[in-house]
Length: 219
Image (tube, rainbow, N blue to C red; front, side, top):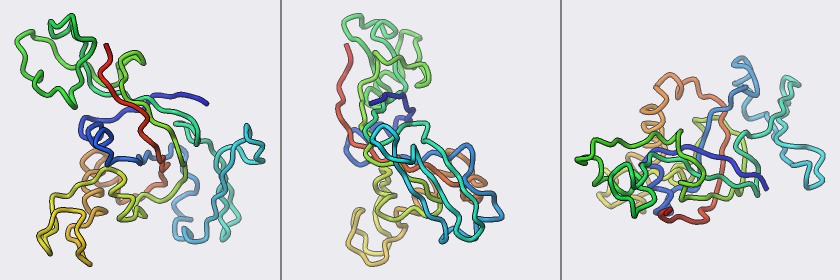
């Protein structure tokens, strides 16, 4: 079992803590197939495995049945059975003049946004392992085109869209045509982070499914 860090912003941290978020998507650095082959999406077969379990394939292997192309890669965040520890915006107790507290977390301690110490939140990228309070177990890894996200998976990304405009009920409603649906809300969220162009390019992404193992204030 390997352990790696992963960054989440405050909203996604709250979604994990509430149990809403059990998936994350990250753009694959080296795209499986060039853009000219995107029209053959439905003819791509993906096989996964890991050498330490005796499988012939270590990572993911994608075959393009139409072009005969082949692509092989291992997800940089890990494989099923590996663990992730979450990096989030934080501050030490000493930063805020509270030496009896180990750490504060921006996602759940927003009252410290305006403090009289002059201290500021430390960026998530600088969080050490010792300060992390959230551990995740990877339960699945696959690849897919970004725009192929389903309604169910959009909700597993932690999406809450504020209520259905058709029936007026809170999401998830039982309406046959929810509006906006979770996939639309996910698209808007993605574009707010990565830009419109990234969404419309429709890149291949790693889809990492996970279970939340623990959370608690450190120190």
